[in-house]
Structure formats: C-alpha cells, structure tokens
Image (cartoon, rainbow, N blue to C red; front, side, top):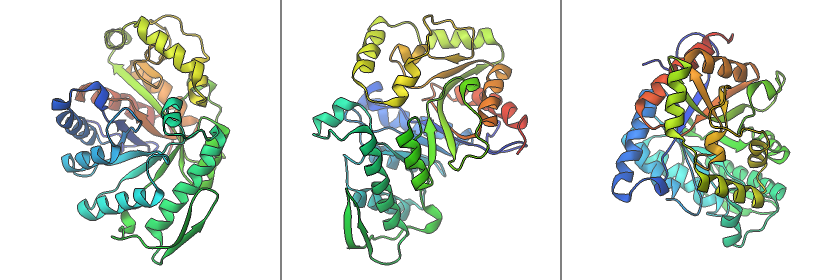
Length: 342
C-alpha cells in the first residue's frame, strides 16, 4: 500500500474520521471503531478525528479504544469547552499519554449544533465562542507544558497555582486544530499557532496564500478509482438522493450560525451527477458534513494538487467505508504530492 507520508514531493498530514455511535449498532460499534482505526494506520495516516456533540458517545472513551487497537495512530479528539473544564481536558491528555505512551491531538470546537449549545444554556455569540476557545486552549497547553504550578487569568477561565499530574512527556504534546472557515476562527488559529482547518470551496476558488502564518488544512471526502466512471458509480451508490435528508439540511441551514455551513450551502449543485470532481451532493442530502472529490486517480490528484499549491498541508478525510477507500485515496494523494515541489 502506498504510504501518504512517504516518497518524493511535499509532506502532508492525513487524518481519517472515526465512525459515530448514531450510525452503528451498539453491539458492533467498538469493533467497527477498531477496524477503521487499523485501516487508517495501515494506510499511513497520522491520526483519526473523533467527533463530539450531544448525540454521540464521549470522544475520550472512543479515543481510548482507538489507542488500544493501534500502534501509533493519534486520535484527534474534538474538544468543546461547554462539555468539560480545560483542566479536565489536560488531565485526559496527560493520563492517556502516561498510560499508553501515545499522543492525542486536539480539535478545538467553538460551535457545533446550535440547539445542542442552547440545551446546555450556552448562548455565547459566535465570535465570543472563539475568544473563549483561545483561552481554553491556552490553559490546556499551559497545564501540559508548565513544570511549575500554573496560573491563568482570563475573561472565561482562571487558575491559581494549578498543578497537573501525571506529567506529560513533552514528546507527546498535542497539536491543535481549529476551524478556519470564519475570521474569528482564523484569528483563534493565529493566536494558538494551530492548524486552521476549513471545509473547502473548489480549489480554483481558494486563493493561494504563500505568505500565510497559519498552517492550513481541509476537511474533505475522497472517492478515487481507476476511471471517472468507476468513481461516480461508487459515489452514486453510496450517496443516493434522500428527500428527507434534503429537508433536514434546509432546516439546519435556517438556524445555523456556522460560517462553513453557509459557505458550502451557497454554491448551486442541484443534481447528483456533477461533471466536476468537487461534489456537494452528500452534504446537501444531510448524509455527511464535507464536500467530496470524486473521479479517477488523475482527476482527484489534480484537485488535491491545486489545494497543495494553495498551501493546505493537513487533510481530514471522511469516514472510510472500507480499507479500499484509503488505498484508492492514497494513490491520488501520492500523484498529487509528487507533482508539487517540497
């Protein structure tokens, strides 16, 4: 199998995404997570994103399962400040590192589903949530890196001489990702030195930013096969039209304050069979939450190459249906990487 991190060309970092409890029967879920994690590791991925929201299992417990099922794969745990204190999050990272000698990366989540936040009596405005997120991550990082009792005084969080035990091996310090789809998100990424991950527009609409001071990534699905015809057959079988999903999507768009939801919903894409590699049909049918790249290895590689040329180096892939999905994606990534100078 081609390894996405090896060979000539620009270096990238690839995460996959963990299945959610709402999509898998309870009796099968643990084994399904372990299986997808093993596929991801065998494909040479750096890590695997673990979602969080009110309707799915706790991401830290799922991360523990991933760690126990793999040798080196890094869970990218979604962290929502409403769910736990920054001290508790830092304690989780340190404890998993202590128990397993493994790294856990952190996907800092400012929003999510608005009704989830309101049900927990959190009506903080969109941009203010990112201010809170920066403080939260600063506290987590400070607790994990300080060899002395740690103090912090902010608008949302305060600590006085807090000590974190067990200590985390500095080689296991987490990387941070933050949504980069809004100005507030980009400001948070800059403040934290985090990777700004966005749900991308088609690559030709993404402006190159060679002088960027923020590491950039995208969240995207990939269906690549030897020919365009084969890829679209898989895509249409996997994501058929769903009228109920379309209505659910429309309702969600009417109440969201998410910048990326609005951006992805803006382009017109009224038919499932698009001639372009960039495909929003699954998103519009409420079947997944990212755009897809669909086509032959060369077609998808051309799209990935354009994203690479615009500075994106981190890719978070959608939940794979099989190990073959990652093998096919790897072939497209390898062609894209080898065509862009390091």
